[in-house]
Length: 266
Image 1 (cartoon, one colour):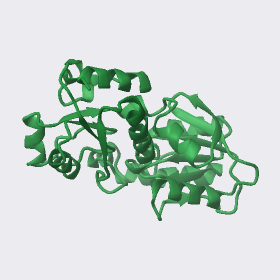
Image 2 (tube, rainbow, N blue to C red):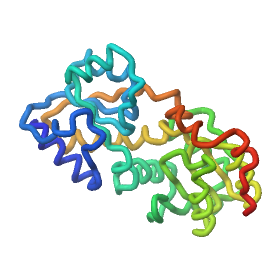
Image 3 (cartoon, rainbow, N blue to C red):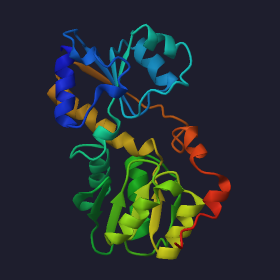
Image 4 (tube, one colour):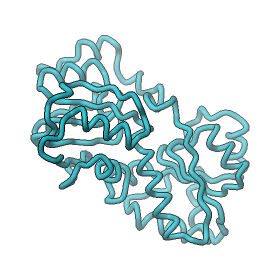
């Protein structure tokens, strides 16, 4: 399949897709043939090395490539042995993307977008413990950090794919509350978020910044198998920094004191 055809397919699936985070922004415009495509959440050194060894020509990722990737992965990218196409926000809120795929998988229905949030409802009598277990199954993760009473019912859920529990994203907690949500799913749980959760009786679940995107990227691979049968596909499952902080720069956005004493009352 020609690369520009593959890019056109991706743009139909993720209409907001930009080539800004591609390692070679013009690569998708060419008639070069691609026969093997890799899919992953994060373009880690391990994923890049395994992709090159497997003969992958284009690696479609959720998160962009960060500068910290070490040789020989960096060399492979510099020599353009492998092109990395990052979908990121374009694959967040689209109908087949990261959030909608995950929400459907855990039983959240009647989905709608409110800004960057996706909001939906659960079945009557669905308890917080059951929601956590659904998240664990969907993500293949035994331990998820949370705040809230396990016995309480969950009726309305807000989801954001990003570090939504950092103090500087409080706007998402407030919007969730204004929309009548009793539960918020995001990542990077902080002390400020825990205080807000308890003060307003909101239930929070930390899904892991990278881990949240995994079901959506697996779903993308299945979609591409149907849309691009001429290509073969391989999923690579290594993640940035396990599943918690995707990038250490997030920790530089606020100080420890600001996290502990963040004015959630105001």
